[in-house]
Length: 368
Picture 1 (cartoon, helix red, strand yellow):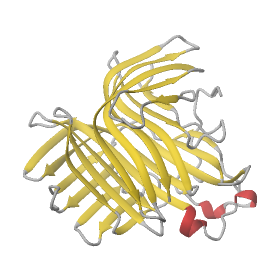
Picture 2 (cartoon, helix red, strand yellow):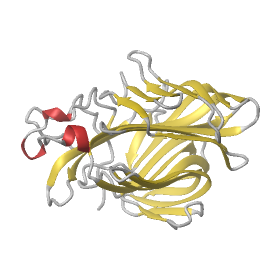
Picture 3 (cartoon, helix red, strand yellow):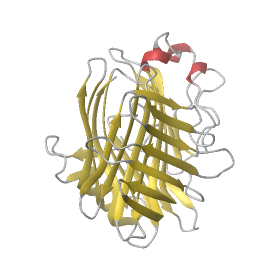
Picture 4 (cartoon, helix red, strand yellow):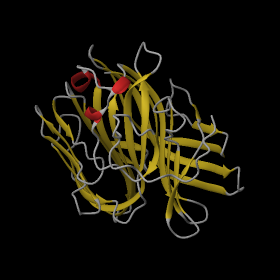
């Protein structure tokens, strides 16, 4: 499948048109609000969708060198499944290639509002343990705010973070895609995602007794919402860094998810153009090569079409979850690490080369 579109249209304010159909496509910018209740015809929500199939989540990844001379990384996820909640935080020491803290919670309350950027309020509050996770984008603020307050547990130190990021950054990308439900042959559901990449920020992170003052954070945000199949799988990659020519860039890659329609394409490159403005460039479908039994070994991602994609990923630490609770089963590995390689524009011959770009790779297998 070759993606022909090279310039992304502006995102619509609503993901559903006046006829109740999804505005399928890949866009620059973000809708004001996600409202699946307006879908009609084949896509009209079913009675159990709101409580069983609809899911919303946010994910953030922030990495940088502290004023104390340490390279650290912080990831945070909040998922609202309506019948259940999930929140997690992991902190990595990049230089030592080790996890400083890892907290995973399911006993609590999650909330993710339908505003994907402006007006976003995502939160997780633990019930049995003090855990407060908040990601917000207040209206008019022009940036994200993130707050974490987790008490120490027997085997994990306390984690606290307050930071802001995204001011003056590149625009997000929105992908609206039809979905084929389990056991059906045509699309009757809708999913959407808003990805923000190459964001700059600052914050203060405390892990146990150690504090990191981070004035040059780089990172990414993922907001996703929609009707999900009971069994969902995907492979995913994300990177933020600097090209060999000094331009800042961001990268999002996926296989096996949100790819039922060629108009909806999550494989995207954020990069500064010749005019100095950030642009989002669509990339072709990609293939992830890795050893699922040894996810800390190197990964490779390749693709052909509008771009020749040749990337390698070397993990330095991993966030993972292998849990089977019957109703919910989570089996995923998400290494953090460094990306390197090249993206070659087959139309112009321009080559985007980089190395040492921080990011993640993921092999996800969910029953939810």
